[in-house]
Image (cartoon, rainbow, N blue to C red):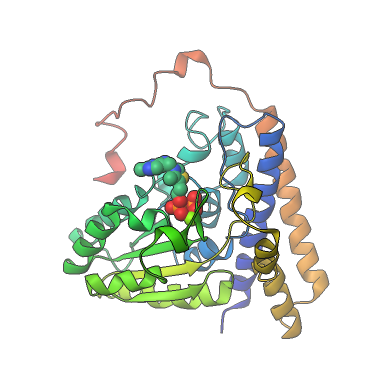
Length: 331
Ligand SMILES: Cc1ncc(C[n+]2csc(CCOP(=O)(O)OP(=O)(O)O)c2C)c(N)n1
Ligand SMILES: [Mg+2]
């Protein structure tokens, strides 16, 4: 039984991601985003159900489609929107943009433009935790896609994490496509979870559109990691509602029938149906929560639009690590 405040957090987080992505896309179409954006709407249940078990001491590695991971890990939506708009008030002073949002204070190692690069970062964080005897309080989670699941680095990382029993979760978001290439064509197995067997670790297939199932599967994997029993591969079957990036034309490689089928499994609508049917929350309670989040996102857009660009004097700041200052807390 999930506690009421956790359920509220889960609902708010899924709505926060959905509304953020919709507003972010609108701003991108208006020319207000600094560069390419990759929306994650449709996939909200995945980061929500997993990050529900994490604290700021746990580390996540993310992808080019990273906004949902950032939000579920607790990053503020106003700073994120500003970052995407290239503004000085953003998480990385507007110099990172959509694919480089990071916040070490929240255990967020960074969105990442390199497909598969989240994986060794999360394994490195897990190795650090194990080395320091902190795995009960600090684990690593690597989010990556079905496309990334065929990158060599995943296989090297799963092997190493298995033999060293590292506290890490490999969270594969199988959203059915890598750009325009369907996973049924490009991936050698029907279920990516099957790849775990080669590394002697559990591989679990999860309905990534159902936040309750994600929550349950993640609970088990997190417990295993914190107890020193090693890694788990979760394959979360999901779908991105929009194209690969903001200007992608999905009609070139997928059908509207397929899109409609996935929309029927919508994680927010199904959450609402379940909790209302089970009389956990009323519709009006959910509407109130939803409109609060909608307001928050409107404010985030306003904050981003009204923030200044970084001044030219800071152009060369944050380019190289200052070992005496920047790495202090990490030793
Ligand atoms: C190492 C590397 N190869 C190729 C690319 C170009 N690229 C960017 S996203 C992407 C598809 C990734 O697909 P998947 O891992 O399924 O993630 P999704 O976009 O579906 O979330 C590719 C090939 C890249 N950024 N990095
Ligand atoms: Mg994919």
